[in-house]
Image (cartoon, rainbow, N blue to C red; front, side):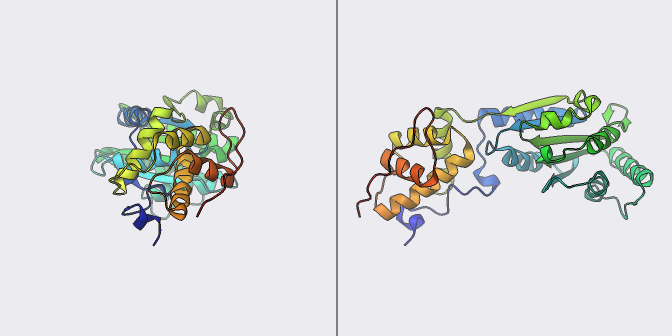
Length: 284
């Protein structure tokens, strides 16, 4: 028996893997989607989403991609995996994602191919959108200048391409490497940690999606989760997942504050404003 069977769950409710079925449409997420779709639909050119580690930027990026109907948009999602990406490699990657066949190695040739492809997409009645995650890793002025060059490509009514950048707060400094590009940011969204009320609703939501029919986390446990996670969704998931495992080992049908504090000690987490308590003795 594992904790899924013990708590009568159909699947793990607090995995940090990005799955749209677990998407939690908080007020700030809903507002961000509206703002980003406005930027895309009005062909503004550049929108930016900022947030600290674990605040749900990647989840929002995946949800945004899912919201872009293929009958209305030519959309792609790119994730920057390391900081050694070159401008040439990135431009070719964007070209391939947008359907450019045999992208040229010469910069002038490649830009010409991209322009022709963007014009073709526009004339077919679609809007081109490129979502990019972890953009703060692109820390070169050259790359920022290349983005600005692509945003110079316009059609009547707006830009031929709209970029939506997702990144850590330092992305603002990266954009500032090319001041004209920074000035082209048409929409800016800032993702914040959850309040205690939203944290509670988030936990209930994920448990419900996983098939939970009972109240597993009692009120003092939920409050403790918020304190130790500071309302950061990724940490909420990690704490709750470990709490379910701990509760299973202790054979407790409900998770209380003591279980959360025990998990917090194991994970090396501290509650806002106070030190982590000593780990309580486990009773088997």
